[in-house]
Length: 162
Image (cartoon, rainbow, N blue to C red; front, side, top):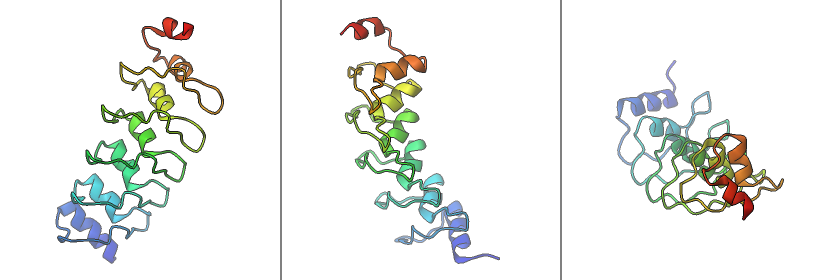
């Protein structure tokens, strides 16, 4: 049986959503919204602004977009958190999609883990990163995390002495 939402999802996949569509919050039985589906299929309009919409697992459209590097260039809602307390910036750091001019490395999630810690874990800090002594709420520095996950910088010994 095709529900209204199933038909909308099919329209997204076929690229036939009507111009001016606004019911992005409608979700299927799995909790996936039309906005999430449209994002994956490249069908979100340029003026889309409901980045906070969550699926039933708590992932916002912005978090999914961050994972796929599909956020608009002017996106700036880095602090937007998902149900797990992870910010959009953390998601982008984990997937190496932060913009080159990103400067909010101290932005922390609900557990005190900063964007810099997340990027260090995955080896995605920029070469010019300098805040190696930034600590999370448990006292672990960005350098500690980089070492733990095998991503310490070449000049780590010098950084340790500073």
